[in-house]
Image 1 (tube, rainbow, N blue to C red):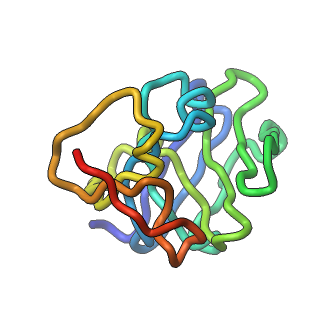
Image 2 (cartoon, one colour):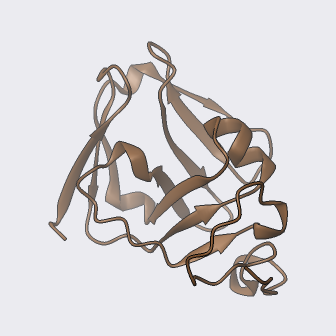
Length: 142
């Protein structure tokens, strides 16, 4: 994987760069992510916040916090979703779709107990989150 990857919102007014390697990649099946992404599952890439840089259009970024767990950010010109900060985890989720040169290699499904789109891919299916991230650590069958 190349060291720096560029991404942008839907209209291109906001551009970001991620540098280095993601801390993790996978799929979230929770109701909040499904509603926010307008899809049956959300593909995530997790980064150290210092590895994520807004290089253009910071003035167009808006934020919404439904809970203290996620700082969801989008472009105010096109509505394109960009990323979510996860302060409790010390990580930033840059949505996999906006950084197309990152080789997306998911390693886990989280909140699979809430899934509306069963995915039989052999990856671990967490009921909620791994225990090191405050979840039960329980897996559920595919």
